[in-house]
Image 1 (tube, rainbow, N blue to C red):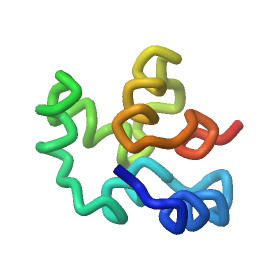
Image 2 (cartoon, one colour):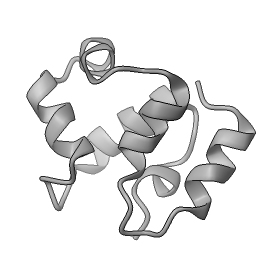
Image 3 (cartoon, rainbow, N blue to C red):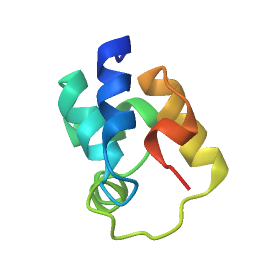
Length: 78
């Protein structure tokens, strides 16, 4: 879903920056598309995109990463 250039852009963001929202923007994906495609609710995707959740399950993080064809660390750096 994301190109190598998009992934490099994500990696340059500060760790506190919300990379899921940026990945969606770079990939031209709406939150509702992301929710539908991954089987999440729109409110959940919105909350994660706005950093309202401080923690995310590894399973859900992997789903987001697989969707965008990047690593979990690219989206959710430690």
